[in-house]
Amino acid sequence: MTRSIASIVVLTVTVPTVARAESYALRATALRASPSPSAKVVDRVDANQSLAIEASDKGWMRVRMGVDVVGWLASNAVSDSWIKVWKRERKLLLMKGERAERTFRVALGDENPTGQKLKRGDGATPEGRYFIAELDVAPKAGRYGARSMRLSYPSVADARRGLAHHLIDRASYRAIVRAIRAGEVPPQRTALGGSIRIHGGGSKHDWTLGCIALDDEDAIALFAEVGKGTRVDVYASSDEDARLGKAGFLPGAVLAAAKAQIQASALYTVAAMGVVPMDFPGGDIPADQAVCTDIVVRSLRGSDLDLQAMVFEDRTLHPERYPGGREAPRTSIDHRRVGNLVALLRRHAVAGSLYSGKGLSAGDVVVFDTGIANGSPYDHIGIVDDARDEHGNPRAINIWTVGRRTSSMELIGQPYPTVAAWFRLGHPFAYR
Image (cartoon, rainbow, N blue to C red; front, top):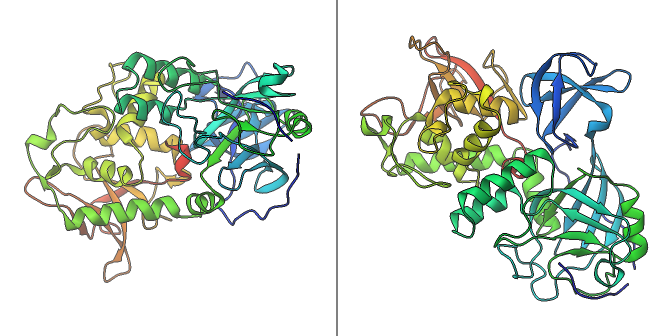
């Protein structure tokens, strides 16, 4: 959404120290057991899914999704080239891994250049993780300049927020989620707005209706370096980029939210063990009650990460990953089951293990086997504390059983219970 025209400047820039850049999938595709298009499918990768590259072989890459899901993708389905935008500084950076290869001046909306986009007509540029969903080599010159690259706005995070604020209904929310995970243009005519683009037309002054405008020659140069699916991360500022991208930021925030729950401890009740009706997204049982999963859900909510929505979305699109298979997703209980959280996090954590407790650190999600005969080793869950026991083992923030309250306990490194898995979260944009 844009207005008129303007002009050109290429800038130099210092990129802040951040956590290591990830590779990602340019499109939704099958993850295969060997480097062949006819090989067995071992899982499916969504568009923009973060990946770790482990090997390459004649046009194929062996990648790891999350903690332990490994397979092969065609090399042209994986990239480490991406774009970041700093709104306050009016800068766009073309990145290769962690390195900024080129930097361009941009213009934003003339009425709301630094605000977060919430709905149609607010004139703001959205912040968060997007991808280039559509390329136009010859847009209308008076509107988009020499080139146009439509972004995948609204994102899943935008859809969750819109649903929570009653701007869209469940059907629109689900349609946006499906389009984003498939790597396609999401619905553009909802109350959230649409047609957010990186395009030409000039960068001398703010003039768009929420788009990111470059000078025409810069738009042409950028267009030549990107393709459909190229990741685009939009930040309020370089400071926000540095804060969110700092290694260990998210585990630290999760730990702080877990510690806050000790100060306002909940009680483990029989009522909390059942299916409790709640809102979606952002639903919860009464704050003075909890089971073990609620401690983790609330810890992530402290960083604006909604496990309720994440499990619902992933289970809707990939039911085969979850215990219970093709049972209909239930927003009041699925995220409150340890096995479901393990199924989600094993594919979306940046580090962890399903086989040992070695390597965990403060702020990680830790899962225990308590020996209950329920067909699964995943019985109990908590957050790794930075406090340690007398033997140097980290404690675990959790709520243990009926009648107990949220506390930090000596569970890790003990004969009982056994650590069955642990997970470390990465960049916040990967989960919002």
